[in-house]
Image 1 (cartoon, rainbow, N blue to C red):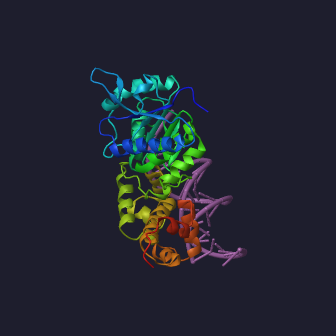
Image 2 (image 1 turned 30 degrees about the horizontal axis):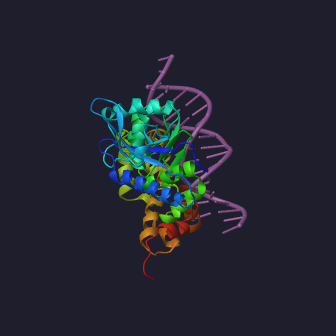
Image 3 (image 1 turned 90 degrees about the horizontal axis):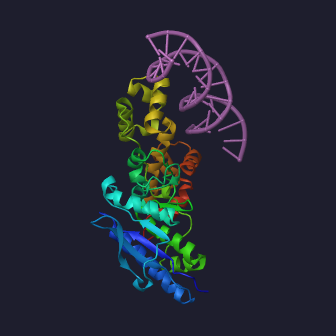
Length: 324
DNA sequence: ACAGTCCTCCGCCAGA
DNA sequence: CCTCTGGCGGAGGACT
């Protein structure tokens, strides 16, 4: 079966964007096309787009130049490694992306590329994700976006956002799935030796507490928790450290960090435990004790709640394998 | 796995 | 009036 027109995927090459992702995605689609050729399926046209001096955005690279003008069905904003794209650098793309979206294009982003999409205003009120490292900055700049940092990829129909730096793999596979179907998606992922099924970003990101809230006494407590005493700090202790009454401390802590004191401690302890699960061969029980739980069952329960999988499963998936 | 204890934390409200 | 503090009670959750 032949498609009326070959679907085009456009990758936005904006200032500072990560070339590895640009070429990785291009290669991924090339592989999908190659697999598809064996089934007699017309592949995907892949193009790169850059902002022009005189304004506007134009193709600067094209896998099928003979196809003529056309409009991309999907546009991807790749990651940026250092700081997210500035408002000025995003501006030339924003207007154009709005037009393309209005014309029915699917907009997608990887990692910090979400800043480029958000600059269009289209993410307002929508669910989206980005790299956990940029969470604070993203919320600050685009408070009206429902950011869900735990998801590796959020497919919201006309807008797809992906989280981690290597999430371009997931995104690329998702797009292959949409344009060429699940069979080719599976073949492509098998060829690339990646596991296409639901990986969640929270398995990868370590606990990054909010520290930029400006509540000095609370920050002092956070630093204190970071240094030592983590295992045996009660709310009473923390409040004393902040020189506040417990009721006030509770409110201020929650407002500043977004977490209840106990939740915060649990994240801290689970963070330590993850490290030991990944890099040591200590038993899970002893790791539980080491991070402050006298009852291993309680530790397992908390770990499961915070990470979404049990300590043993976590070690199996993320532990560094020693040669027996 | 269960039960028991102790702590957390939220609503409510009064006061500053 | 609004905002912030802080005491009290107690259900529910954390931990043993």
